[in-house]
Image (cartoon, rainbow, N blue to C red; front, side, top):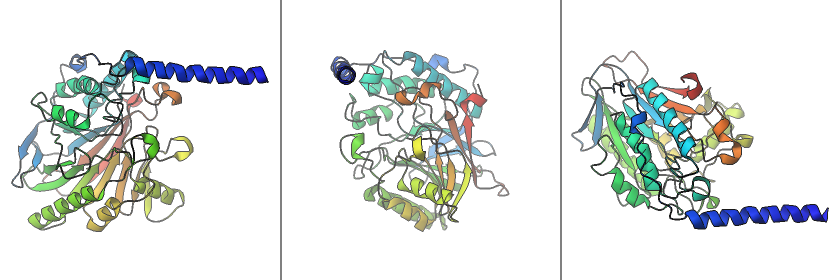
Length: 384
């Protein structure tokens, strides 16, 4: 028995030692400049989307044809761009190609954890090189796109800061990226919005993007931070100002990375059969139906309910959760994840049910007969 314990302790020590050596060897390791643009279908025809600045001074989009506008959410892609993840990265890129070519979206939203600069697992902590590898593909589809940051994209172990990543995203290198870092007085970076217009040039809705991929402390062990008061106040100001300008409460949609506490409360409400929650599709596939959210409900979701503007919220983060429910009149949806790398101990590379994309379809037609929006999820295994 003593020998067995000694063997286990020695194995644990060796494992820790290997991790420390890997951290030392690969810390600061720069990823290669990989270009995945050649993986895009050369015969792909992007949708006809007009990008412009509206009379409110906001970045806006409008279709050049009379139909619904399709927003494709891709989340938790986790490109490593290191020597340990070459094959997995190509699988993730191939999955993105299949989803874009199947949906033919008008707007692509990357909702956090685009990259995974954890050198022990990937062999590189160069988050900028990994992001450039991903965006080389996204740009090849000549479709407007944007993103919101996740908890891994620029965390403490990453080589480049969030501000440096923003410099790249706002640069002239990217022709189709609509991202901007947002007001400097707000918590996080990348709090921004895009206005959507109908085919007849009338205002349709606003899509908000928040950086809530922040920890309470330095690491993931410290817990997650809710959308903060400064972010909430900015959201309230925009909704109220737009509503006054257009003479009605505007419709809006929200994307962020880490699920808010409302996801946990809504799922518990649904499981308990309460009337304030309605199930649409999907499952809580994490162990024990875990929802990795902040411990307390902040000011954001109560403000959403109060204002009555936001019809749907989308998040990522929990790779095995992909449910969609309505809670207190707001649709809460997990985007289906792409990840082949980050959930290494859960064997994520061999799982299939959770992998795919999520589509928000917004009615921008001149006809008001249809519903304002619909949400659907796409399993990768169903289209490849």
